[in-house]
Amino acid sequence: MTPVRVAVVGLGYWGPQLARNLYEGSFAELALVCDTRPEALAQLARRYPGIPQTTDYGAVLDDETIEAVVIATPIGTHYALGRAALEAGKHTFVEKPLAASLSDAKQLAALAQELGLVLMPGHTFLYSPPVQAIRDLIVSGALGEIYFVSTSRVNLGLHQSDASVVWDLGPHDFSILSYWLEESPVGVTALSRGCVMPDTPDVAFIQLEYASGVVANVELAWLAPSKLRRTTVVGSQKMVVYDDTSAESVRVFDSGVNLPDPESFGEYRLSYRTGDIVSPRIPVAEPLALELEDLCRAIRTGSDLRSTPQLGVEVVRVVEAAERSLAERARVEIAGADNPVGAQTAH
Image (cartoon, rainbow, N blue to C red):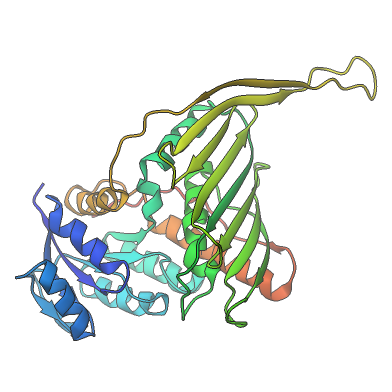
């Protein structure tokens, strides 16, 4: 596959990691980096001397040799920068979330479709081997009927100045849940508090309801004594614990409860099953590299993306609904949700 010439825009926390994977990957050529801060460009130049730099986004768009633009800037800029890249004829990658509103996310997805360009939201966890392994277990039916999912994504920092913890961390778990369950939630109830900055929630507890009957609880926090990335998936046949900080990231529990037919009205005898605990072998790979390779393959071959614009839109829909639940202090129904695993094909 001929490497795709890519420009990275935004060299804050995540941009340098994107640049590194593009620089090291055989699927891409890091052709240009852009940031409004000369000091950020100078820092990257020390790591990758010889890579062209600019502080002018217009120069990125005007460069006809640039095939794709990777945007890693603050959330509030995603729509304007993404739209400009698409209108300039560039395939576009936008770090999560796709945009700061559902309306803007829909417009970006529609524009990419209209122009026949690849648009990818940066939901990196979809490319994590443990996440893929658990999806395989769910789709194969090995876990049985999925009853509920509980996730904790907490750490001490990083407080964002332009977004709540729901906008910052929520897209990770919302995208994983949509990828696993192949459906979007139909209802959300959220509770939060701004502990450090009263107007910016830094802890949130979000309950999601799905049409299939699955319920999920998502705990998010920038204010915790230690970093925790832990998810429990409970099915009728087996249960899974996914701990992203553990050497054994996935553990499958052959545990459950059986309810035989009652012998008489009101008489139930539960049978509890506790079997083996298996830690399947999970291949080692950097999710970000796999994600960017998926982007470049879609550009070159027209293959389907794993992280689709449709999924990006659905994640923003859930975030907005959670924010509305927080504002109204009530359960919010999520209208218009679609199957989030639809594919986008490059033209």
